[in-house]
Image 1: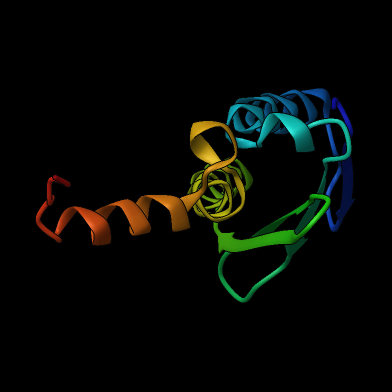
Image 2: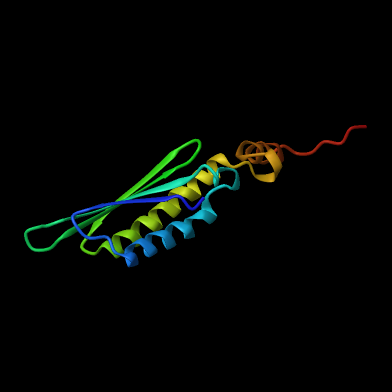
Amino acid sequence: MKAVEITHSGFDLNKDIIRYVEKKADSLIKFIPRASRREAHFEVKLKEEPGHHKNKCTAEMILHLPRAHLMVKESTINIFAAIDIIDAKMAVQLRKYKEQNVDFKRGRGRNFIRRIRRVARVPFRHRR
């Protein structure tokens, strides 16, 4: 799964930034469903634009999964802060993706749980 593609513009990409991005991408792997981990890969775009007073750093992360493409984008003054923020946002999106697409309880997904809750409201009747 170690596919992390990093593109950059407006600044020199050093080893510290590459290691930091790869570390953050590795921390997100635990949120990806096991069946999707082989096909999943990250695409990270880093960009720095000169501004009037301060530079504006933009970080964008796209996660390609078998059934979806999740995208997060953030702009701040510091590139490391932008990477931290997109990491947190992507974790939230991955949790939502996993809740919607992974069948819990061996093939019984959220619909099964809803059906059980609906049935549980009806009193149980004994047959004679």
